[in-house]
Amino acid sequence: MKVKSLATSGIIAALYIAVSMLIAPLAFGALQFRIAEMFNHLVVFNKKFFVGIVIGVLITNLFSPLGMYDLIFGLGQSVLALSITIFAKRFIKGHVKQMIFGTLVFTFTMFLIAIELNLAFQLPFLYTWLTVAVGELVVMGIGIPIMLALNKRINFSKLIED
Image 1 (cartoon, helix red, strand yellow):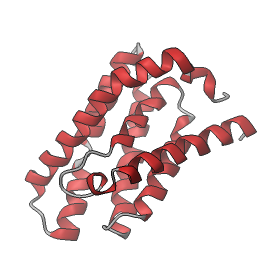
Image 2 (cartoon, helix red, strand yellow; image 1 turned 90 degrees about the vertical axis):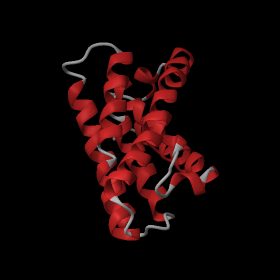
Image 3 (cartoon, helix red, strand yellow; image 1 turned 120 degrees about the vertical axis):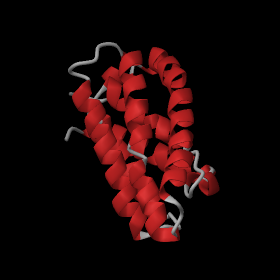
């Protein structure tokens, strides 16, 4: 990995962690609005952002009250949804469409977080899936125009080396 790519991945991971920890009570649990999830849209601009996002999720989940469950299910959900989003870029043209698709993928795959919360706290699966999915849908949905505006200034596609 080139130095610029490594540094950029580290910055993305640090931003993910910092934003999550700022709102920590809302970043974990049955009703969550992990604002840093909007960084998931970065893979639409360049798949190499995957590394920074995953490292950010991993380190953030080390602070989770759910412990090992969040390391397995939370990280797994992120890896799965990011991978599907990256794969789908081949078939979906345009950043907005790709981000909408990614938002739907992340929202749907929150069933893994519902399983986690069911195992950890015996919360009802379907209700919990609904609550965490709504939180994810809201954050990722709000993240689309934010990431598009940031991309106009920063140009995410060129920020990390291919």
